[in-house]
Figure 1 (cartoon, rainbow, N blue to C red):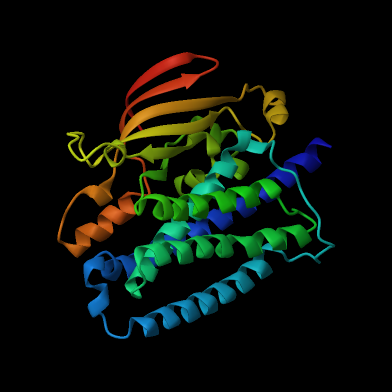
Figure 2: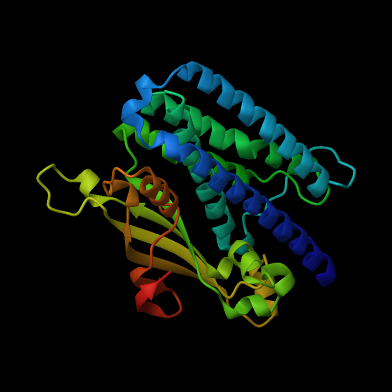
Amino acid sequence: MELIETRAGHRRGGRKGRRVRFFFILFFATAFLSTAHAQDSTHRATEPCYHCRLRGLLIGETIVYSATLYGLSNAWYNNPLTNFHFFNDNHEWLQIDKVGHMVTAYQIARISAQAYRWTGLSDRKAAIYAGLTGLIFQTPIEILDGFSPEYGFSVGDMIANISGPALYTGQYLAWGELRIQPKFSFHNTALARVRPNLLGSSWNERWLKDYNGQTYWLSVNPSAFANRESKFPKWLNIAAGYGIQDMVAAETSKSIELGYRPYRQYYLSLDIDFTRIRTRKKALKTLFFLLNTLKMPAPTLEYTGRNGFRFHALYF
């Protein structure tokens, strides 16, 4: 039984790692192509035939994603498909993988909105289109999971996939801007050496697969909630983070069997909202847009049920 559980955990972990890698590659490629045009939104109306751009963007997204999904389906789901079924993985990885789904879907919506602005859409319409894109990009893979004998449709994953785009679109509909931004940070841990096949054998695998080194943040901009006379720096954020430790298997019980005591970590830190730093240089705007994916290293207060409070002079 132990061998079967380990193999199943390896399959799920490996497939999720490849999926995250695909979305990160897609994110950065699209960001590079679109932000050079989309950041300067004040000149959208003067762009020639922006309806043609929207049509071309939608057609291009459909073709590229369909081809990519076809290739990934052949690579991931090479066994005969079964009847649609569910798989409850909500107990795995202390739910940090679900947070990762939410953040990934949010970032897909964020970069998609930049591309839609480039086509001439208003911020409001771009946010709505982007929210739908963020959801559509991940839903077919969840459905394919439901037909796979090795996986299954995860309701928890689907809820997380909806939450990310909803957070992006909801803020634009409510405030006309982003005030709360999900972000990501990573540091190497010694745990990856314990189970390199599951947690990664090299750095480029570990930042995707070792959940012990991942921290997910909600970075809030206080100045956006303050009155106009507030002296609080517009670029300075306060971030709340979540991480886990001592998880060397997907299940907590399995990690305990291997001699570890998994626990949750909560963080409070400072952060930077690079998009609120004014610059006229398009290259810097693009760089700032990409950097806003990451939580910047900063002094951080950590709390765990095991060790209480702990201060880090610099945490990433």
